[in-house]
Image 1 (cartoon, rainbow, N blue to C red):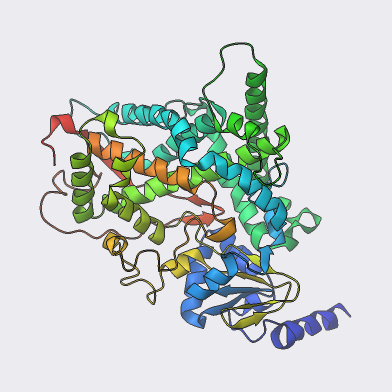
Image 2 (cartoon, rainbow, N blue to C red):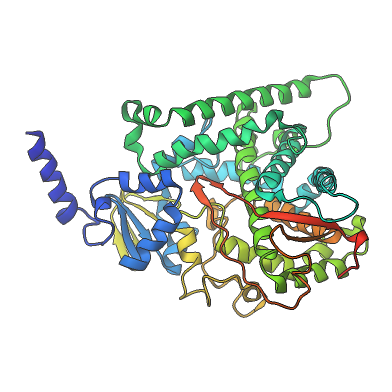
Length: 495
């Protein structure tokens, strides 16, 4: 009897399901385990890209999911006024309670976002800016500590270094905490635990059925244990932060936690409870640390792989700023268009999260890019895939920052490293500010090269083109390198 039922379902999925007209991987017609497998491997972003190359703009990536690879589809799925909502599997990303990342209800999300966005305004960023510079000074000191007699440093793994730097920076900005992971290994387990835990969560985002009967916990015991370690870390962190509010000693410097406690929804006048502030700030530590560290590592990879753009950006920084005190948020930093173009191009080629952000079609169905999609189906655009589409990007596989300096084309291509629309990353202004000021400082203070490059690589006139900075996509990005060497500029002639 079960065999007959199974065969009947297979026939339905292949011939009569609402998405049966769309082609895709054979196994994906029958089971979500196909996409779950690629989520486990960490190559789901490149697999979606490969599928679009093979099957076209519309790919049935699971029995009830359609991946779309068009600019119009991107706008109609993620833009304002759409008829989709976040799919139910986002519930697995909630640490202790729903948050702005996991809300499926649009009204709830809108209210929460109106509060959170106040923390990322220009005036708010200036409030937190001193914390960025304190951690940046520590990063510079760590690098200089690897120098010998003013020469090039020993090779430094920038994936690990930037991960520690971003974690220290985010925990300070949000909680006024000082874990000093750049120098002390005691708390480095926290972000390692997040990476390991996210392997399981990434799989569940693709295949909710694996949570049935605790199958996922038996498949990923290491990820489950890592998740518990991180939740324990968060509870201790939040406990200490709440105790600091009640302390009678000298108050801590302004941080995002205390800022959110005072914010109100401008439409309703309602603020956030302590529990709501706690869950939002905990989410920002994870998402912010990963996005910032991955963007920094990617930009370091591409800059030190392109002698032309390294020279351009280094010259721009060193002619724009005359002293360290000049390097801060504001008009001068914003005028560094070559640095910003390289960052944007790095995010195009290697977005921190490159797979599809699935959305469920609401009651009544929706017409997306001319295709009618029935209610209950999930749709999404693969970020990595559309960022590499030659219809929208000339030399789509190559590092070409000059494309961002062409004013007639800027902003017209389908570009979404931080997503777009009402669900776009609310912390985008902070991430961009952190990356821009960090590289301005590093290139002002140091000459930088790949550990496997000759010391004169940026000056010998030979043009180099970097290979793509490969990432594994497990909700957060798992990365390696680049391995770089630094030399203080005071020991060498300036560019």
